Length: 239
Image 1: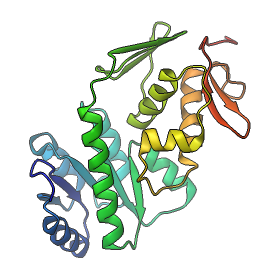
Image 2 (image 1 turned 135 degrees about the vertical axis):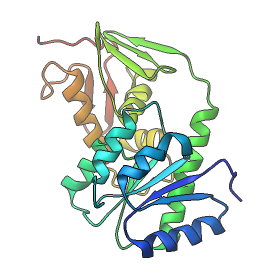
Image 3 (image 1 turned 90 degrees about the vertical axis):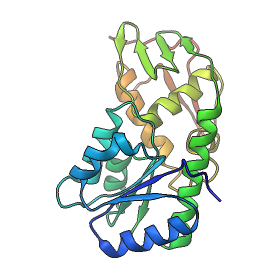
Image 4 (image 1 turned 30 degrees about the vertical axis):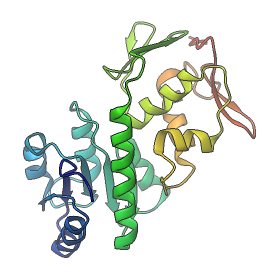
């Protein structure tokens, strides 16, 4: 059974989905707080302090990706599972870019969504239990892990939670080539059931933020047929 502290917030305007998920989540031991619109959910988010947010993309007032962005602007690392009837690559990329940790296409099975919930909560619990080195510095990059901030030279770079996690792993292994599978397991977890291309998408976003010329990266290198590597010098060149 799950810890009573692992409260799930559910935001969906489909009453059938809410009733079905509430019933099954409560059976698994998760307290559930549900909302039918984004405005009310955002107003109550801080006081509820959920351990996991299950969020529908299409809501009557605010779309799911916009809610993700507003939550990621707050000091919260809550895992977000996006439910969407839009399963195309562009929609998935938009959902992940807004700050969602995982996505699930409708219609979905109860077995699958419960597995995703358990995986996200388990990973979040492990991450919170780790007490990492406070600061990592590689070349022009300085990362404060506790404060979740990144400086490129003297500039503060805003990163999504997954961008931050991906770059942290690369900085901790500067100079080493890490396979896509390794990065996926370390950042998204071994239970992640999404597309392996997620790593490539996030690498592209990181390069857009860190590289002087994203098409010719000097910090985040691609190693053909092997994976990715953070250059030990990590210098932003080409300006």
